[in-house]
Length: 213
Image (cartoon, rainbow, N blue to C red):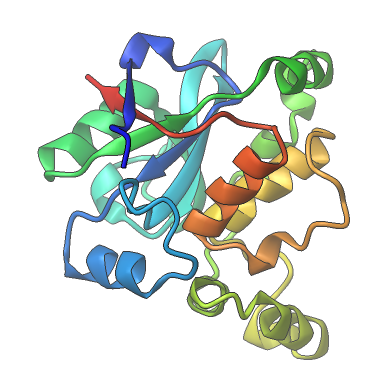
């Protein structure tokens, strides 16, 4: 197996995805239980994306991790889609013993990104801030059962409203709203590993590069 490529923190650009490795038993169980096992060297259990926030680069993600501190947008700890400074977020993960990978947005995709993000306040990922976290959707997507979750969402909104998003579902939905990913892609079916493989396979992002702080 070839050695995983590495990049510096300064290489991160808006539009890139970021995959996170496990830092505890829950994350390890998620990673080991997630299908498909690609790429094994990048044992993703969580997924986020780099984008702009008030003129600065930040990391957007959907999580229930209270240890990340206040969301820059909500100015308090929230559960669901939130935003934090990129470097502080990565430093928290590193201090926990975790590793993170950049999936760089490729040139053609970056051209689409640049055209779609002229007005910061209209950026889809910003409009999704505050969306609640979907734990059941995340659980079903671990085993590619997102189709079942979609069925339940449509018939029993109280069991999982469409307004709820888990980590990789949020990232793929943001790419869809920006025109980088076809609307036909069912974002609720993709766990972090599957989402990474999808983005690389479709030529939206390049292969994972471990981020070195």
